[in-house]
Length: 403
Image 1: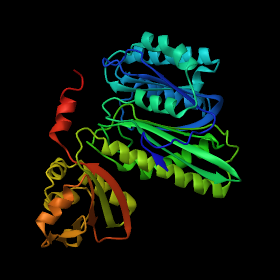
Image 2: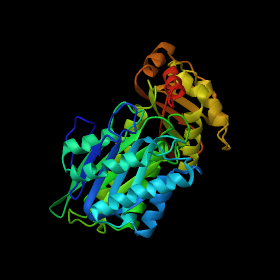
Image 3: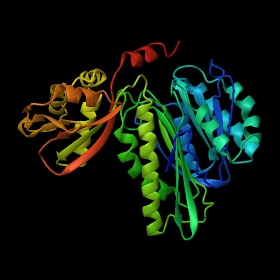
Image 4: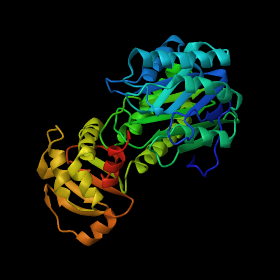
């Protein structure tokens, strides 16, 4: 699998990409982007669980239902979330889709909108519409156009997030490509992120929805930076069918699911690693739970604890904070069965401190990435969950975000 900006990209057949500067971002950087599937594509999407949702989330949901999972184009803007903008925000979103569909000679409901940026500021719709002709005229199926698209959709990210892979079936090749943005407001039920997944496999929308939901449960819903769920979170999977390989075949399903999981796991890790102010990425491995859902509940509580996150920032092996977080997770746990490991070192055994080399553990926790294992002693289920430290830089970034 290829990941990151420098890796060669496996381009799915049937998609073209473009980007432009519409003047939404004060920085003058690219802030508008388009992907067209000229022959059309099937699609499925997952959205934020936040009850406050942006206009493009509302419109995207309705359009996918009306078109029965058919998408001709994806239009994205960054720098403005078009959220908490009232009826005008919905009108502006619909107007962008309508103008794009007219230029593409497509149905309006086949244009999928997406936005990211600051909340509560009116969308500069005229600026976006003015750049639509250029976005359509300049689209291309090249690595450069993909990289430019990835750059145009980011906000506080320090770098774009990409991952691609391919597999062979029936003497043909199936390509998958994932592009994401996300840096803060990262929390399960999706994060503050946009994720766009493209493949040239042939599949029905219902088939895509099933595999997307299953894969996201193990990847995008198992990451956290700050515990805030955004208003614009979207994961969209589009399939052009141009490879001629069908997802209906059992062996193809297995390969596709595996590769899609790899891509989504890579994008998840890239998002967390690029979290605002992040210095340490920690994989929480919760083991010996009764069910996987209970393991996730424990991991999530630990991941969101400010006391735990500040200890991670200081590379402080304060295992008592983790034990306390397990105890307030809402599960019936027996503290006398809980053991905790930092890296490979046992620091807490059966709910009590265990002698360990504090300097060795501090050195382990000073690494950019490491693992903490929590054994509950209640069963055989487990989960893996990514979290981060909480630094002064995170506070600085978010204290100044709207100014």
